[in-house]
Image (cartoon, rainbow, N blue to C red; front, side):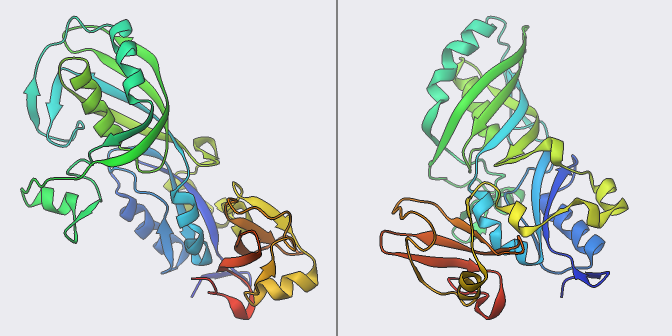
Amino acid sequence: MAQQTGGETVEGLVVVDKPAGWTSHDVVARLRRIYGLRRVGHAGTLDPDATGVLLVGLGRATRLLRFLTETGKVYRGEVAFGVATDTLDAAGTETDRRPMPDLNREGLEAVLPRFLGTIAQIPPMVSAVKVDGRRLHERARAGEVVERAPRTVRIDRIEIEEFVPGDHPRARLLVECGSGTYIRSLAADLGEAAGGCAHLAWLRRLRVGPFPVEEASTLEEIAAGPDKVVLPLVEAVRHLSRIDVDAETARGVAHGAVFAATALGPAGPDEGPLAVVGPDGRLLALYEKGRAAARPLVVLAGAGAGAGE
């Protein structure tokens, strides 16, 4: 059951500024205690040493998280060249050290285009990807190293914000990318492309989809005012196309009705999920439109809740 506060059920999205040293699961567990809820989940794992935006859903908002996991991300991080680690970041054990005094900003900029667009990337052993039913980070802790199939990811922008030369140069990067991109793998690959090795020194996630870090709250701020930071369900899908319906249509939506595609706006076979909002401004459902019909993906209101899943 969701926590009751002043007769209202607490549910919605919380934009968390995750601190270093916390796993994404730790943050979810903390919010379960703060809100007195069992139904809490997050949209997209953030590494324990990384900081920044972690989207956490409360109550029925957990059913919307899959539509947020697939959105683009923006990161700022620092790549340390000349030193490799077994985890590809600063938390790991050093595995290689090769001074790279000849690497300069211009040389690094020359290799960046190789990593733009759709590329193949091998997930790190410390990732949450499952191989043969077990997460890679669990196997890594057991001392295993297994073969990982490359995954297709998309990187839209890599910008060098600062470059510090030396035997072990450092570069602060801003990266805009699609879902599933591993910045630690990008750091290691950049080191290899530059003729040496590298690891990710630190990482901060600045944005997930339409949610920037400026909207995020620390765990301390959340604990101090839990209700103040919860975004309503309709805000959780602010990145989706929206249609406001009248009371009669809303009743059909609440029962998971299938509509003619034109009943929910112009038909479009390639259109993404559509947020359907009732006369009171509340999110009723997410629908998918084809050429002939609009069908429910997730129904959040009324007797039809659960339709389409």
